[in-house]
Image (cartoon, rainbow, N blue to C red; front, side, top):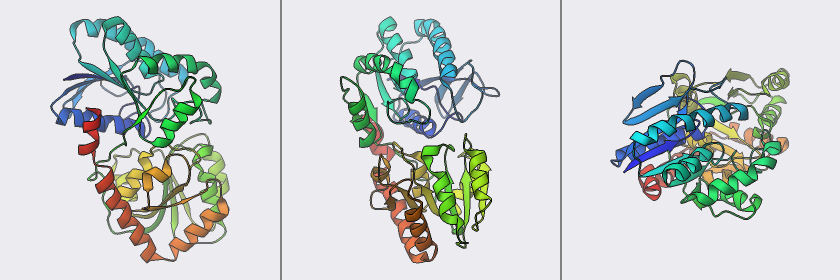
Length: 363
């Protein structure tokens, strides 16, 4: 089967959904399918290349940063991608299209179906669904619901990586659009446990809903004997750095780090504890990375987080500084508990997030 694969964010661009879509494309190739990816271009990246059997077409567009994309930049990608595909689809036949994000990318897929009769499926990752990313897209989603209904109704299947996101779609779209859940797998050899250091790690875009401010405040009152390392960039950077100045526990800001770099790999694999107590997560790639590396994971008891960690992590209310302080203090003085949780997390990755099983559902 020849598959057209659409995602405006594909490695090295984007956040957690980017590597997930790459792994899906890679698994399709391993099953013997041919995959052509159409994605955003960016300065320094080749316009056309082949990576592990995946053919990648990078479309010129406006994009200022690797780690984040704004709506006006998405519009330029859609416009130029449709322009590219008008010509490309005349000479290239595809059996199906797998598109990632109902907005903006599935707009291209819906156009290709109308123009060329190419059927498509959609995987939503969070921000394309109203009610998920209220930090950035609340106002925008007032206008996107008609578009969402249009592209979702015309697809051959709509999927999400968590029951939480599927439920959110059905709750906030009128009329409800059926979503099926296919969990996002993980390459268990990407991050492996190694001898642990006294590090508490937290990663992601520095947005208010991610809860980095509560982590910093939770460790500030006393020196826990651990260092807190925060990887990521975003609009809260200066505010978080200001809060951290009064912390008795050492806090290190790394800024944005490529999650495939040696620096990130070493930091993740040697961290003892991983904390991401976010107010909104779908199926967090960051949590899976930490679990694979054998970290003791602390995360939210809402949204998609409990589904991700199961009984292999500690879940608490988001925005609860006191509870987070209590859990961290306990773990920092209980090495046996940290080791036990890290082992359970690794086992869950091996048993629940096996791509060899999950990719066949998509196939």
